[in-house]
Length: 383
Ligand SMILES: NC(=O)c1ccc[n+]([C@@H]2O[C@H](COP(=O)([O-])OP(=O)(O)OC[C@H]3O[C@@H](n4cnc5c(N)ncnc54)[C@H](O)[C@@H]3O)[C@@H](O)[C@H]2O)c1
Ligand SMILES: OC[C@H](O)C(O)[C@@H](O)CO
Image 1 (cartoon, helix red, strand yellow):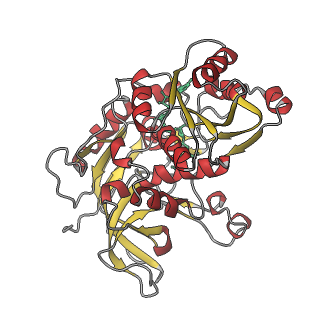
Image 2: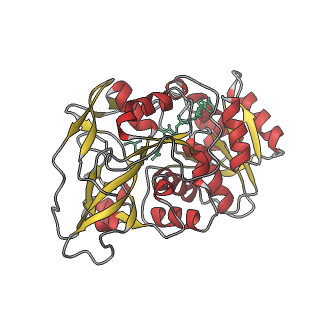
């Protein structure tokens, strides 16, 4: 990739974005690398910041570069970097922790209170020409993994972390609420971990159709009925009269969280991956009486990126199938509109120094675009 532009896609305030040529970042530590960003996917949280300017207590007060699902090419390496060299293709882990606090030293760096995380205010994101980061948070892609696949390692790592939190083991049944990118990837990782039944649940039929073709063994179209009734229907559909071993919420939607506690079996596991409304009515008696193990899942930690890359490299998870198209950097806002409109699963934005012609995918089989579901994420009370 030639080019030296550090053109950046910046959110000033809700629905107000602009392109700005910013100074190229420099090495701040001999352990850092500078990466030219080749491709970036759009996450629901980027769209939420664009629409609302805030997620919970993270409020965009100053202009912020969007984007955190990226892959790129190393263009400069600090003197102390031994693991990467100029020209290496890498998946970017977009957050790096302090390495000194109790969470970091306890092996849970994703919970570091001083995490510097791309496109989470006040930190700039990766929709720019270049990104500077510690070398150990940039993962070399094997030859078998393309740069476009590299941009999907971030959401896949989210899914890996969720499935690890759930401790999914061979032969288990797993119900996944929500068939957006995270839910789809959770289903695929659960299959890779040996789950024999994976049920995808959503409110949009076309998303379920895609889920069935991707990793789900069963699907269920959630109805506007009581959570207990949806739960009974899910279990009947999947042939799980005693309940599911594991239920994972990847929707953030209150009704699906409520149904989840009625879907999980006695002694089963529930993991909250979706980020919707901060407070909901939760069936706590079901949790108690069934002795459910409930866990949260936040971003990714030790080993998650590596496993995500290994799963793609080994051909166990075909992340390319989620990509509907690739757009030029100048079309970033239009790509955000498409994602917000629910018309696509993933769109990749090429870096400003990347030359692309049309919707240039490195895959022969783009995903079938789901039917429009304007504001589906909003309906779930996203983020
Ligand atoms: N835990 C983390 O670290 C982490 C990281 C990334 C994303 N997230 C969150 O995970 C969730 C999924 O992310 P995504 O990118 O796939 O988002 P998405 O909005 O594309 O997917 C959510 C899906 O849930 C479906 N849905 C809405 N209401 C539902 C209901 N009542 N029952 C079943 N399905 C319903 C929607 O139709 C949609 O397909 C979001 O809440 C996101 O904020 C969490
Ligand atoms: O994948 C990472 C997530 O998008 C982020 O943690 C975001 O949702 C909150 O900052």
